[in-house]
Amino acid sequence: MARLPVSFQSLAIQCAALLAAIFLNYLLQISFSYQAILWQLVLAQAALAAGLSRAWGQPAWWPPLHLGFLPATLLARQAGLPAWVYLVAFVLLLLFYWSTFRTRVPLFLSGRKAWQNLASLLPQTQPFRFIDLGSGLGGVPFYLESRFPDSRLYGTEIAPAPWLISRMRAWFRGSQVNFMRNDYTTLDLARFDVVFAFLSPAAMPALWQQAQAQMCRGTLFISLAFPVTGRQPDHVVEQDAGARHTLYAWRM
Ligand SMILES: C[S@@+](CC[C@H](N)C(=O)[O-])C[C@H]1O[C@@H](n2cnc3c(N)ncnc32)[C@H](O)[C@@H]1O
Image (spheres, rainbow, N blue to C red):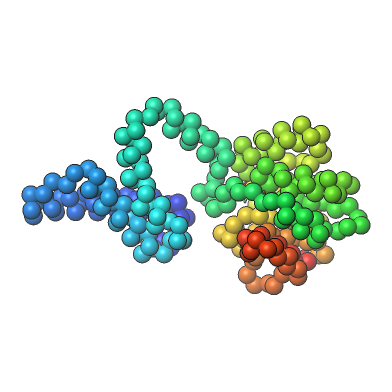
């Protein structure tokens, strides 16, 4: 049960809390002839869901999400928005976040300071083949292209909207960066001299195994913000902004 993805855990929690709130309401009715109003039921469900989330040991941001979910749904319903608004919001979220429920890696972007530090870790004298796993809007390879024009730069992105935006940006800039729409787990990392990732703690154990199995001796694996367990990095580049901006590099 503990290995259930957090999205399915949350679905189970919401349903269980709803059933518990309905059952509680039933007990109040038969014991005290008390008829709860809708908002009381909703708030009871929200509190139960947040409690279950804590009890299940979900990450710290989940209990507040559970607390807000059903009340927010009810408020949105009372706002009387037309149905297409929800459809558009859903499609946009789908296009940008795609299989985040499975990969547990949402889209968020790294910044110029991190790119500058990343550039300082890369081979300065000979061209190399570089890939950004989960390339988002393409910021990393575009920046590196201006610094290392002789190198071959790639990005791979699973979500359609960021991938399309990076392809269009490449087209407008006349860039040679090759943006692929692939799940990086299906790629052979042996093709690259430098593999860069800015993903999430959840993605790192499997990615590290993939890198160890596929990357060639002497190549570089670099992670922004998320280290791997089991092997100390060969280089660490810290930024004033804190651990979220630290670069970790391993010579394979
Ligand atoms: C934190 S963002 C980083 C974006 C970009 N690399 C940057 O530094 O600005 C991670 C990206 O990885 C993508 N992603 C997550 N899992 C992936 C997978 N298995 N294959 C390819 N892309 C993936 C997400 O869609 C998201 O756009």
